Length: 468
Ligand SMILES: Nc1ncnc2c1ncn2[C@@H]1O[C@H](COP(=O)(O)OP(=O)(O)OP(=O)(O)O)[C@@H](O)[C@H]1O
Ligand SMILES: [Mg+2]
Image 1: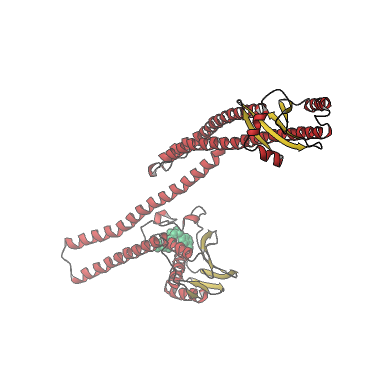
Image 2: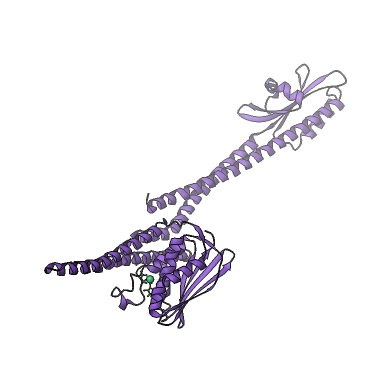
């Protein structure tokens, strides 16, 4: 799925999630509020019923309705004063109503399925009668003269129910409005957040290998995305650089191969144009052999670098004494140094390291052969070995000669990079991949290499871990 499609999906999904979350939260909140009100109203009703029943029971005991009827009725009226929608029935053991308030016929409440439980447990129950709802409580009391009275008290629930219904409707409306607002709000905010991102994606989607020089203008996005655009542009810089080097690399290989092949073709055409002696043929074949060897060396160097690129360069680790390895290499180069009367000066020492002997020999010999090439006659190449830390050693190979401009230094390790373009491919200076090979070998050993140069000397500094 393309980024744009995914983005569109997010623009719809996110507001929906926000809306659902708001809905869910508000629903829980309103549920909690409703339940709390309901609980409070039940508690109010229950305590009202209990206090009235208690008071009536007391009156029944102290003022028997048979003996002090007027006083009893008066006190009952006093008890009921201030109670709204409260109904009382006092019934004697024969079912005769001793006292009743106006309102629903509470004798019917005696048929309530839980009536006996209410009396036994001093509890309350809901009683629905004539489309109205009540909470009822009842008690049975026997007094000294042997009479038994049943008191039934009911309090209307309709007002509470109406209040809760209105609360429910109000909260429902509030939830609906809040959800719609949350939906619209999150749609709008997602839209405005996504808009610059979508613009950015459209620009990024247009970048391909042909338009790698394109850079996204920072003005295209709000300030908070500027660092993202900068990071992206920097990534494009790096990719473009790699692409450019890759292009140069291919062109360079083609060029490097063309020169010996042209030489061979021309030479062969000249030879074939006339009859030659066996000696002449032999000479020409020798000269051809040199070109073949050069090509073969270059191809094997390229294969080596390709291996390094694919991380297939796995050093065959053995214990190496760098001091004796370098001494051996210096001896190996003696015929070359003797020609220019160049001396080697090996100083310092370091601990043994774990490394691939063939690879390290190749790396050091590449640096030494460069050093010999660029050192003026009768001068000295210095090699310093040192122990940087317990687990790190350093090799510095320094040769006198012309200063290499600092702008070239980081590129010396690039493939086919040569400082002096005028010498490019025309003499025996090499193909320009020696230091690239050195770098891949050092990196395969988890080490690092860099070059420094000043008026006095050019130095190659290698840091290597003692163990990989
Ligand atoms: N010791 C040095 N002093 C000055 N310049 C150097 C030194 N070593 C390398 N260079 C510069 O770095 C470039 C790259 O070196 P590198 O060894 O990669 O290539 P090369 O020697 O030209 O060819 P190759 O090593 O493949 O035969 C050289 O062409 C040269 O310009
Ligand atoms: Mg070289």
